[in-house]
Length: 88
Image 1 (cartoon, rainbow, N blue to C red):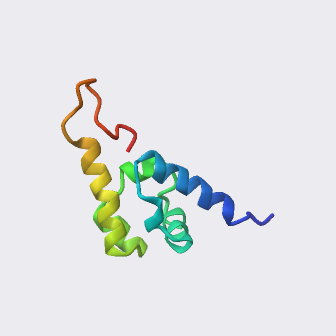
Image 2 (cartoon, helix red, strand yellow):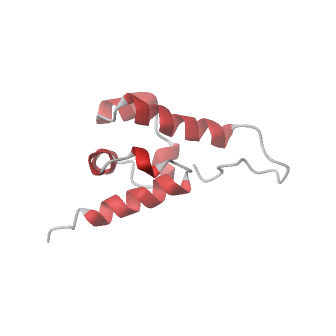
């Protein structure tokens, strides 16, 4: 049974959105690269490394964007005690 390529892409978009990504930066081919290389959810994006994302074939600008989201999540906490992007 073939999977409609739109389904994994939509899941990928939701995961990126949950991390605070600017979805306008990502084309369908970028979403396909992330999906095929195992970055399929928020945890996968949170665990991503520069080396892994580059080896997957993602362009440097998107690698930097994803890593910046991770850095923001690990940054100083807000007054609520939670990081501004605690999900990624």
